[in-house]
Length: 614
Image 1 (spheres, rainbow, N blue to C red):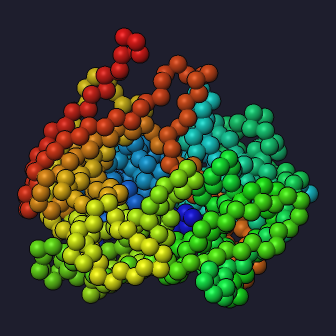
Image 2: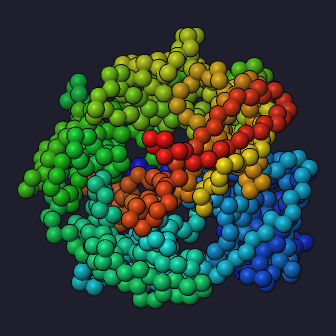
Image 3: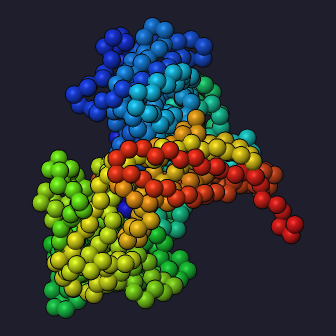
């Protein structure tokens, strides 16, 4: 189990490759299964200067970044001249990409797991020359072994690309190709679709403070770089050429000589002392005075017992977590973190005292809407809640209490909430266009900044007041005083100024190559637009191998992966005189009508700030 399991499970982009040779007259456009419009997008796909036939080009939803939304809304296939044409494209914010696994293509400042180029289309607009130049990607193949030379199955690899200054950024395979960075049943791997350049490869744990590895064998390994070194400074860069293959890039992992120990934990009801079965526990290493965000999960058995195996000496934190995994409902319990320390032997028994959490239930309503077609979409809404301690301290962290979905009749229920201020948000990117959470009421009284709850409290008359709209903000961004760095990205988000809900972002749109953005589905009112210019972003994923955690047969074969984060590449002061690009924001207010479109012009000034002291 892992904190980022939901994220990884949703990585499922649809990739159709060059082998799909379908004539252009047989485009995969299914008008009955997708929204239609009057827009047209056309272009050409080539390898170098040579047109290529049979490449599927897909139009993906680009209104918000969410890896579950990468399925193509419209598809077209290139003809003998490499040309494609998408007809009846609806107005909106999209990404267009050539879906060609194994090839490297031009991308317009895409985030990890996104593809292609951003485009914001008007109704009836025709965009031509949306061209893509493909290059055959490079390949790296090899084997991952244990210290004795035995192949390791389902061992994850980490891949970094090096720039001209030797700085590294994580390389992540696109969507459905994610399994390529994992070994097969022979311990072999084959990573393809790499751009020409230099790369580092490693397997084993990441060495991060919050990584806890448990394997069936009980063996743990240090992060080992090619060729067989745990010292990153001694790692050898792998040269990858366009269309070439770097073979026999084998890695023999170095065993962690620190002996792993077992921990036996027991979950009991804090009031009765009765064992609490089948709750999820999260454990993470402690560094300094507070726990590290992230960690791994284990499930208590029917007797409330959980066993953690193969942990090195150190301090740890163990707590009940209600993060929903696999669609299962959260429990009604929470717990305070329990700290324990492993010195030179197994630890028995760590007691986790489960407390009845607060429960919030009620109904979601759409203010001012009676259209049954709109109201029927309520059941598509999902959200989450977390508690902030009422009296924050240096060691306090938000406690994620519950994932939830709204039922057909508008009812909802959250459970296992820790005492404090509970904030409720709809899930960005998972909410149908047009809906947003406007305010939260308890017994008819609006709640500013969240709902205060005590342990075990039950609130049954909570209303989530949503608004629905069809207003559109369409804007043009002018950049003055400089240029974005390579890979830089500009986003514009919208938030109603009278919204009484804190936390969570509003709908957003990328700014495309023409400087345009569009945000749809806004209810009538005043909005604050926030334009954010960001440097190139890369995904850092900390992964480990499969194992059996907690002595629970249900856990066998699960993959332990720590939290996934998105970070800009780290500048190296010793090799680069160019300062890192600092994210910049511009805010502007606009009045949005109930129906219709409002034009907006925004200016992004990239004039460098004067040196300090001037």
